[in-house]
Amino acid sequence: MKKHEIVAMRAYIVAQGGGDYHAQAAEHWIVGEIATPMSAYPAYRATRTAWGINVLGSLVVEIETRDGTIGFGVSTGGPPAAWIVEKHLARFVIGQTPWDIEKIWDQMYRSTLFYGRKGLVLNAISAVDLALWDVLGRLREEPVYAMIGGAVRESLIFYATGPRPDLAQQMGFIGGKLPLAFGPASGEEGLRENVRRFRSMRERVGDDFWLMYDCWMALDVPYAIELANRLAPYHPKWMEECFSPDDIWAYQAFRQAMQGKMLVSTGEHEATRWGFKSLLEAGAADFIQPDVTWCGGLTELLKISALADAYGAWVIPHGSSVYSYHFVISRTNSPFSEFLMMHPDASEVVPMFSPLLEKEPIPVHGTLTLSDRPGFGVELNRDLLRRVNWHQGESLS
Ligand SMILES: [Mg+2]
Image 1: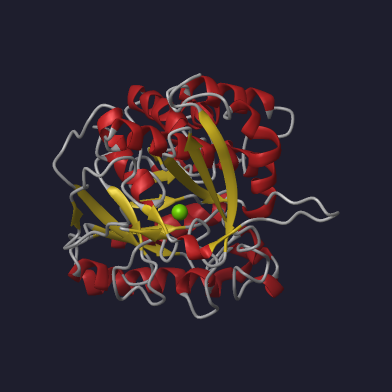
Image 2: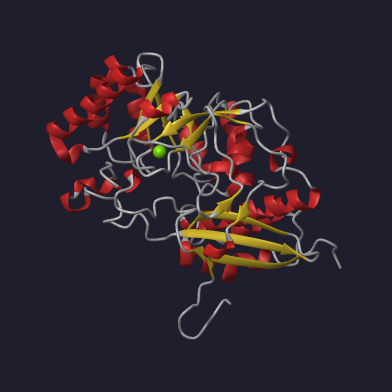
């Protein structure tokens, strides 16, 4: 009998936000007027919840070893991801130990190839993987960053994503990334408004503060080039995720058109080393932004990162709080972090996964020193966890 055999893996959904940070009230900036692929349809322009950005909800995966040690991981995915975790992935985890991460990852990935590869299934795999790293850290009494090579710098620095880069500047962030409000279907008027908002923010923050636009897959190449040309006098640091993640050729064309005038980034909705190999091989981005809770977890992010390093590309993980921080602090090609401003009007720094996580650290004056608590160093607010009761009398409880 293995001393640290994994005896249980449980999937939960979450009563409020957390892993699914889009599950917010209507007045929150993150669900409001933001350009999306659905902006092509006027009925779905005003809010992102109108077309279902919050439909999945959070996923929490908890792994318990024979001695009662429990670790957990978080992603987006809700009940369908919980089903995949408990009905399919659990067989590769139960009876193994948290030291078997590489084998478990490979078996989860290979066994889901026929319906997985990206999206929901990789979210589920990511949550399991993060739970394995967390429980391993607790057993070894080490923080995750120590297990993946150790810190390469003292502390983290951040840029802020949200509607108020001017406030982020006062709070000590190195830059601010605005959500783009209008897509191509809003025509010349929307385009002018996109430029006006960026210019007005540039006037407020001065010349030396990084300003970026997050385009959330909403654009086409001619629009992105026109927008970039009109923004050029206000020198955006980068333009992010302008096109569908499937349209690598659009990114390639856009980056060529930019000729280094601004950086082109993408990847928050891409997954696995092969997805990122496609982007890097095509020269589709100056740097990549995998989400560790979606791209396959930390195990896969380390491979993506090694690949990106060979291409001379930064890896700046999308959001995801401590799950990203332990990676960023340990990698020379990850020089700064994203902080998603989860306060409803972005006027305060609040924990990104609140209220799901406890002891979640936040940047103070734009910097953060990671604690040496074991695992990812956070705990669950268990009051919010819910088991899924499957229909037809079948229950996971
Ligand atoms: Mg983004």
